Length: 233
Image (spheres, rainbow, N blue to C red):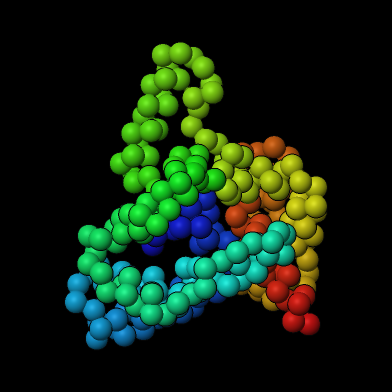
């Protein structure tokens, strides 16, 4: 309930039809409790328990489907998943792993020039700590206030690795058409019988008619399910 992650902009309760809502939530809680009961036999504190949730199924956190999706658009490279390396990393004390401390320092030692490159996500050095990122953000804010120069503005979504999904669906015609097609798909509605498609269609119309409601992430969910169903026909 307190970890919305990708669902930050949506109250999915409102999209679940009342007659299915209770069963869906009960199934979700049952699944979580099953993992929790397994974890209690293996972990020693709440930090370990939280981590057990994160890595219980590693693909939930970093999936091969993400990698395949990137590869469908551009040639890319990925470090192979290595179980021994993963086990070693997880064996380290929490203070060495928090904020990726050990990874950032390892990168600095292995290749300082690479560590100095700007991150496509933040436009700051890729080995920056949270403290350094905060200080840089404060510095930019002060420079912008005192100079009035917008070149010191904090990087916007369009400047970062992941562009703003709402902007993408409003500005890229093919994505807009895919979203509209999916929310009006009777076949998809039959599969997602527990979903309130009338509300989804209303909110979609509002979105494309200029209302400032956040729909991009939800569109990605719906399109992904639709594409999956088409691929397994």
